[in-house]
Amino acid sequence: MRSARPFVVLEATAILSGTANGITMVAFPWLVLQTTGDARATATIAAVTALPLLASMLFAGAVVDVLGRRAVAITSDVLSMLSVLLVPVLAATVGLGFGLLLLVAALGAVFDPAGLTARETMLPAASRSAGLSLERANGVHETSYSVAFLVGPGIGGVLIGVVGSTATFWATSVAFAMSAALMAVTRMPASARPARSERPHGMWRSTRVGLAFLWEDRVLRAVAILTALLVGVWLPVEGVVLPVLFNALDQPERLGFLVTAMSAGGVIGALGYTWLGPRLRRRPAFVVALVGCAIPVLAMAFLPPYPVMLVLGVLTGVFFGAVNPITNLAMQNRTPEALRGRVVGVMGSAAYAAGPLGYLVAGPLVEAWGAQAVFVLFTALLLVVSVATAFLPALRGLDDPAVPGSAALPFPDRLAAERHELARPAA
Image 1 (cartoon, rainbow, N blue to C red):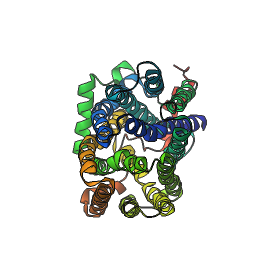
Image 2: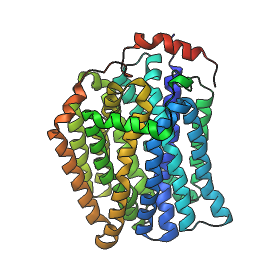
Image 3: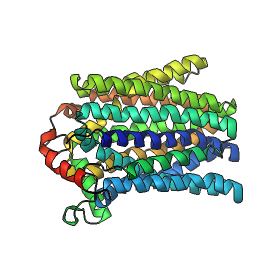
């Protein structure tokens, strides 16, 4: 029997946890800058915490495939809630210095990837339960995250101005708690812990299987490398350059609303792909989307008047709205069901692997050259990488049909198994 509830709950938890992370995206760099007054400290914390984030993302898929998707999603949100609660608790007791800020950031980085991976792996079954095609389901899923990052940074910027950066983390903890509670009271198809005979053996061995599969698939390998390059260029802009620019002006609201403008464009773009995706060839759409989002952000680096920056932010988001749905479709079409958690985790870790290098380069460059010069340099690199995608032969495989045993098989092929799964009592 079809039911839309699992899909609706999955998207609601994506919005709630994404909103929590969106608030943190603005609040944490601001808190570090207020505490240390040093852009290099902000970049150093971001770079160092990217290492546990990378390790967590690398092994998150194996954890999901061993322990079950729903259980991991709930646990991840609960642990993320506890980690962000440390900010106001420590500030009110022992105070927040550089070392404690580093510890809190590292804890938050460890817990989030498992929840993200678990939700991604539950998406195909939840979409079939709702009777949605994968193209439309991926568009809606990315719309949910775009809505979260539309709302979250705006809330974060306003709360910093009203209650201060430390107290802002109470709102983050509430959002994580609501996400965990929703998932805990909902039965999700194909999300329980696998039978013992079907579980991968050993975290490292299981992760190596996912790594080997990803490397041997030329399309997924190309997408993973490309994503790592893009993340390595963009994350320092969002996590260091923009906070430094707006901190110098003492305008947290403007930082929050600029990130919100990009997310608003992302909502429009993802919704557009939800409607147009089934009619488009994926490779041309992927290339156009990447180039289309890089051009406005490069123009933004020349610091036009703030209203123009907001318009450019929206345009960037509109084009980027198609990128993640197409990447997700590539994983779903080319990955066997039993490996999906590990492949999602490995691809995510490939993206985050470039983050530490980008942060470590950005911090000293901002100190030496100034934030705007680094903004121009990094966004120009972003455009170069985006244009290069038009010349990658491997990306032609984005339009290949789904492989046997993948999550993209038609609904009737898995109906009986998922009916059985929905009939089980909630774990």
